[in-house]
Image (cartoon, rainbow, N blue to C red):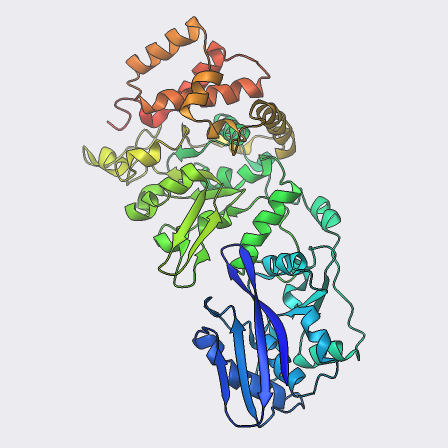
Length: 513
């Protein structure tokens, strides 16, 4: 008897439906065709044990399994449940065999018949709905993330017995439901950190507010213990909340990477990723034999924090240059090419020198002459060119640390950031893939960031006296436009330019000695 069941293969953040044809006829042996990898070929041993240990029987006949389309490589162990269901239906152990084709079925089997979680449940569920399936049967741990897709029956199962009972109509198993909008709005402001925890550092808070308002990349330079990491962790709390589309897009990437918890249905706050400086280039941008999203894609719609930037391998940092510009990364292999979105804010931190105390107000730097410049040169010019704001972080005094003065909460700062973003949304309406000031092209900077004569004179003087590089010119104009938006000013005034110039520390001639 021939039975068709359906599974799914995930490429990038999209899913492709796989038809699994199972034919049980007179004869012997088990055959699986359709470009399966070793994990799929090994499924027979898992399926055989799972079926026997749940009081079903594996037919002692010729079993042929074909996975179509045959030109797409089938990878991983998540097809176990799809194939096992097809075998049970083709051998008459699932009475209503015609109902099998109404569901998309995925999951890895344990030898005792248990069903193990899989990666990419959300894109699989989206594709199942798109192709008109009645429902999807998958591991219970993945049910909530799949259930955010409306108008699709999502059944979370723990054993193969539950699948057979469901398809035979002998179960009280009910579809898992998630109210997507309720889930989204209930958790949209569920942050662990807050800017009110930070004592002092008002200048740095202001820099982070400007970065959040304009989507600017930012680097913090300061000695150990000055609060660079503490401040960076609080940046997502002042960014505008995710909208529902962004939340779905972000959740899809984390689903493909297998980073969602069983209790998670939807990511409602902006991601904050902080890879260690020993990270490889593949782990950062994505890739591998079976391409997986890297840290820059997991930070999509959020913040990527690179602590101790000069300690990262230069090759790792250089592969970020293109994604920073294009806001997506393409992983190309001989037989496949996948795209992952990578629209993130880069926040980096570094010590000013190897010992950490160059320009420290109290402690003396013990680095030899030229070492500071050598340390800074580990970061290439093209990468620094993509960072709009450079700010020096100084240690907080005991008086500020022990003071009782209340500081602004993240929610108050976020309101100002949202107001500035609303101005930018109107400004860039109709412009493709430009949503904030940081994304402006050089041509747009000339059109939008016009300054008066006094501003021109200030900028000219600053570039001459401070030795600012040519690359700093456009960056200063972009940042000053954001400062003007925060001030709700239609034009860029001299004070906006002056503040933007202040945030270009690393461009100053002689900063590193």
